[in-house]
Image 1 (cartoon, rainbow, N blue to C red):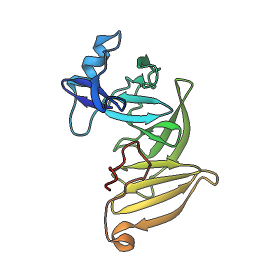
Image 2 (image 1 turned 120 degrees about the vertical axis):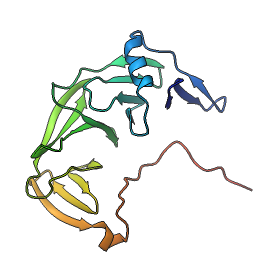
Image 3 (image 1 turned 45 degrees about the horizontal axis):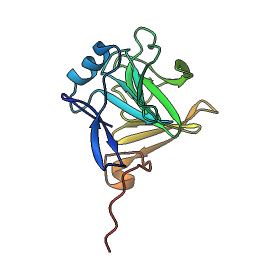
Length: 187
């Protein structure tokens, strides 16, 4: 899926070309998404054959079913809960944090409803904010570059702190996930 001010596009592998996606019934949602394109927004997360979109600092969410090529509405988050929509494995989740917050909460999308699953007290480890926050299995990685805090959900505690500059020589941390895009094989 590609987003631009010109619209939303889907890569059609049978034609090896991009094709435009028709806007949803509510053109307001579509216009809101396409008119607010910036290098960091809207946020897009793809999982389970759908791409979920949300603008920056807004509770509004829509999804595009890539199999049926249909738009869907998702129940909005509670007022005041906003952040970056993310996907990992088959989970779609939202990290709710603000610079003033003493907690980071993780809301998981289940049956098109947002459910708060985790609430982590971060007062003792950071005063700024985390990006990215990666939720994998029973572990949450909270990146406050150059540090990564490792939180174990089962025991509800921080279990490790990694300094990326000292450990890996780089302050950047990116999750790895297989994609549909593969480099061509040259004979």
